[in-house]
Length: 258
Ligand code: COA
Image (tube, rainbow, N blue to C red; front, side, top):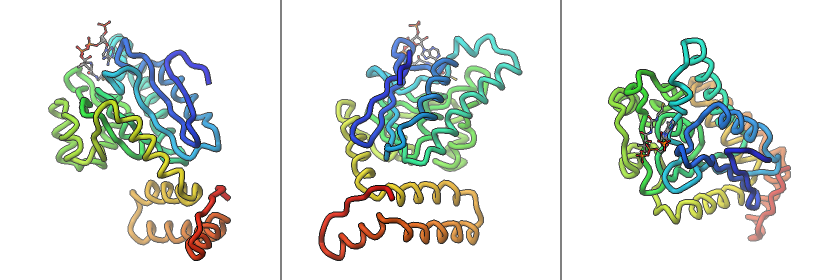
């Protein structure tokens, strides 16, 4: 994959996408959104986990590109929002787990990008926030939808109405991130977490992701029935046989994703 503002690399079965436009703190313009959309739509099918991070040491993503948004009218504003929302939904719906390694500012679209990922970990210098109302707009890449789901309605409303950024330890306290690390440790920890995911049966991990995402909005009985069907499907895989056989014979399972 060859892009102007993204880097892609693969380490083992983990893909790493770096949004790399540090001069503007990785702010998301249309080109970057198009590149990100292309990258996540053409991922290697052998990947078992994806990490998204930001280039440079200051920012994950400092938001949607304000210089691009400044001149938009209503129709163009809605189209820009739809573009970002579509990319983030594509990320959310990837069949494999996605880890946001938040290495600095995650403001506006940066916070929204992190929220579209399955798991967020961050560096101690990270700052999270939805400052849009201070610019005369609202979060437009699905932040009003995802933030209340992650941190609860009351905290989401406080963050979005005030526009105030929070530090890494506060993001940890409210459950917006799962862990905080020193900046130089962050990628190592992200890769370690990815490796722990990659060691497990890949089809089971995919079913687990699909279940948690699909069931979140379902009624209890429907959600439980959804899980039961996928639980059953796991027993049709060679990985289930390998995993349980390895346990019973005190061996180590080799999962092939079949
Ligand atoms: N859109 C466009 N450009 C952005 C940007 C954004 N969201 N965020 C940062 N930049 C640009 C700055 O304009 C600056 O460009 P310049 O060097 O050509 O002037 C460059 O990135 C560096 O940013 P700067 O503001 O000088 O860094 P800082 O360390 O003083 O402040 C922030 C960092 C993140 C606090 C500040 O850049 C900021 O508030 N950015 C906007 C955050 C935001 O409102 N995001 C939501 C948008 S909807």
